[in-house]
Image 1 (cartoon, rainbow over the protein chains, first blue to last red):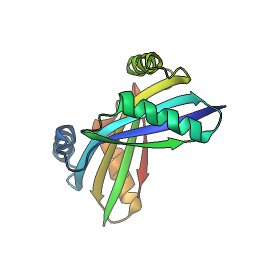
Image 2: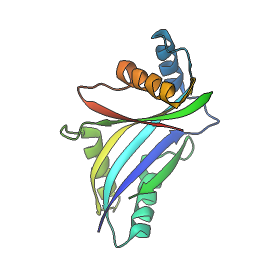
Image 3: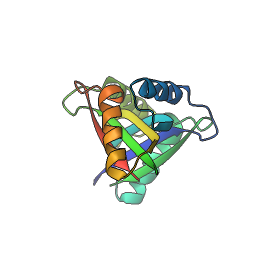
Image 4: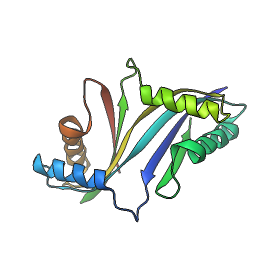
Length: 81
Length: 81
């Protein structure tokens, strides 16, 4: 069966996120002064052919660990539908 | 009140996503041949101070339209918690 998998990759909470800081500055310059704590990461949608949901999740975990996320700087979160 | 808002920005379905294609190639080279249709977008987490959930959502929509997403190439999806 084919599962739709979403992987969210975000910078670790303890690390600075310069891209997020820049976007926050941009939003405030546009008049959105009520915005704070902007963090920017990646969102990856993919299809995985697998026998069951658990197999799809473990393939997604392997993909995230091997290629999509850098564990030194990022955390990932997997959702399988 | 402060709301935690997530904005997901993805390339439009009808457009090619070269970054996704490259990642799919990379995953297949790593032995994950059961992966297909990889699409890569951005995930933005932010905090918005607003009177209610609806106000937070409309501020997030303004942010997405003005700065975070390019409507010619991308769609966005907002989740307010």
